[in-house]
Each structure stands twice: as C-alpha cells, then as structure tokens.
Amino acid sequence: MKDLHEKYEKLRRFIEEKGRKGVVIALSGGVDSSTLAAICHDVLGERAVAVTAKSPTYPPEEMDEAQRTAEEIGIKHYIVETDELSNEDFVRNPENRCYYCKKELLDCLQDFAHRLEFKAIFEGTNFSDLGGHRPGFKAIIERENVFSPWAENEFTKEEIRALAQKLRLSVHDKPALACLASRIPFGERITKERLNRIGRAEQLIRKLGGVQQLRVRDHNGLARIEVGKNERSMLFNVGVMDKIAEELKQLGFKFVTMDLEGYKTGSMLVTIETSGNEHNLDK
Image (cartoon, rainbow, N blue to C red):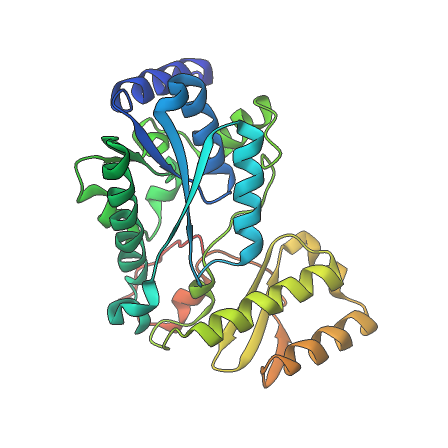
C-alpha cells in the first residue's frame, strides 16, 4: 500500500489537472463526497462548486446534512432536482437500477456544469467500492468528463475516513448511506409512496432507538429492520419495540420485524437469482 501522504499529494495533483477549467462535485453529504469537496475547495478555490440532487429517493435530512457540510467546508453549494421516478427503467427496479439513477444525476450535473462553463464533474466512488456490484459505475465511465478521484487514485474507505478526520470534518465517522430505493427488493416497483414510507420509518426508529446504522427493508408491506450489529441491543426493549411496531403500522406496514443478523451490505441481492456469483453491494 502506498504511503497515505504520497497518495494524498498525487490526489491533489489529479484534482488540479482535471479541475483546472472548473469542476462540479456531486455532494451527497456522506464522508466520501464531503471529503472530496473539501479537498477540491482547498486546491481549486472558486473553480470548484458542490451540487446536491434533491430527489424522492433520498431523505430530506440528508439534504440538510449536505447543506451543513458545504457551509462547514466553505464551498459554494447548489441544489438541483432529479426525477428518477419518471423513468420506467428505474421504476421497474431491475438489478441494474443504480445505472439509471446515476445516469439521471449525471445528466443534471452535465447541464449545470455547462451553464457555469465548467468542464469536469467529480463524484465520490472509492476504490473499495469497485470490488462490489456497482452498476451505477457504468454510467460514470461512459462519460469522458466525469471522474472518480478516489477510485482513480486507489483510496479505500478507511483512508478517506482518516483524511476526513485529519481535516476535522464532522462527517468523518458518519455511517454509509444508500438511497431509499435500495430498501425495495429488485423487481418490485418503486413508488413515491413507498419511498416516503421507508424514509419516515427510518426517521422514527432513529428517534425512538437512537441507532445510527439503519435500513428499513420494505418487502411488499413487511418491514425488515436492519441496524448495525453493535447497535442491535439498543432496540431490545419491550417498550421501544412496541412503539416502533405501532408507528410503522400506522405508516402502512402490515408486519414489522427485526433482522437478527443486523445490517449487512447487499442483503437485497438474495431476493434475486444471481447465477451463483456472490455480490457485495453497499446498500
């Protein structure tokens, strides 16, 4: 493994070269995109701006987080709206759903960059991600002016967190996030109502149980709650469990269950046939 300082200096040169004519950074508010935005702002100054997509597939609190992070960094921050739900290829929820979602986002960022007369777009896929099932990455490599600085400079998730902590970013220990559509089994249609129900359910559980790593998987009306393995005991309280069940049923879930194994990446891939290959999807 290369020395982290050496890799960091190489990354800064990469950012200066690719972003010299202006760059739009896709800022989700997670540790990868936030750390990238902070370094780009330091290297490029006003030639770097952050853009966050407002979409039914992401919970409103993540938009607030992205805005707070941009203010913390000091980078100019803009919001665009994406409309994945108007695309039938996305709504039918195939295994490569993320490709259509990423394509929609990049289309919006391309238009935005064009208006600013900026030439490049950066997004936050890291090197660790490339070992998994990442259909969205296909949409990135299809475009000549879209770059993944972390992946292209071989930064792992752990290295990015270390940099974020060194830069004193408040999101350095934030759990991984995935869009709300990832809570719906492949092949089941994605609707705005289901996304809203999932988002509200996760808000309620965080408030009632205090957990950080959380997914509410929506199996056609059955809520399967996944929390971080070290957080499971935080929900092992009769009063808390009763309240969660009551609240989620009011949202429209028929059954409310907890996955005893806890949160794990790629759990929804077991709902489809995969020709025997193991996938690792950070959803």
